[in-house]
Amino acid sequence: MIKLDQWSGSIGAVVTPYWQPAVRNVPDVVQHISEGLIEEASPAEYRLLLKSLQEALLFYVDLDTDLNTAELEERLKDLSDRKEKISFIRQFLSYYFFNYVWSVTGESFRAQATTASSFEKVMDDVDKLCGETVSLALSFHYPKHSALHRTVAEELIRDVEDHLRGI
Image (cartoon, rainbow, N blue to C red; front, side, top):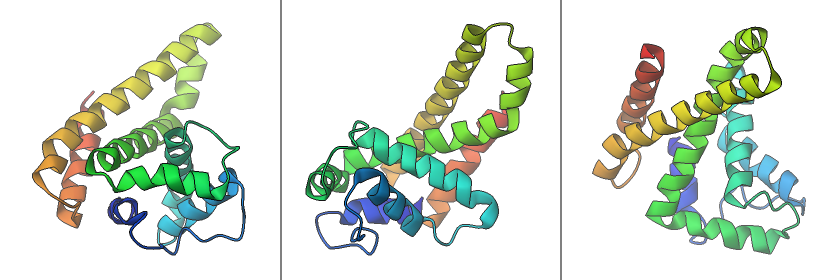
């Protein structure tokens, strides 16, 4: 999260090591950026972080995979704005917690579902719960600080986890 916060604030100001891939299509650039941001993740978390970050980046550019590299960079430059950065981090964390919760509970929900629409409803409910929980935690922790420091990030993550466990 801290690397994501720092990276998003640097777009447009300096060239980041995650931005200069040899590839020229959006999915490959998103893959390259995501891998660069999570390269220090443990093997257990790598796939979850990669999936969540790729989803957040693609969502941020409106799933427009036909952009060229310059257009993608232009759209991502908005992340240097504090409100945009908070919104992006909120989206990333929402995807992260949804993906985590779903990886643990998805098969159980699938087994209990009587119809495809009831399964989709549960999926939507979990997604909404994760998004609301992340928004609440961010509104409490992030506005108090100009940058996301390790202590703030740890408190934020702990609050989200505690809230989700308590439900």
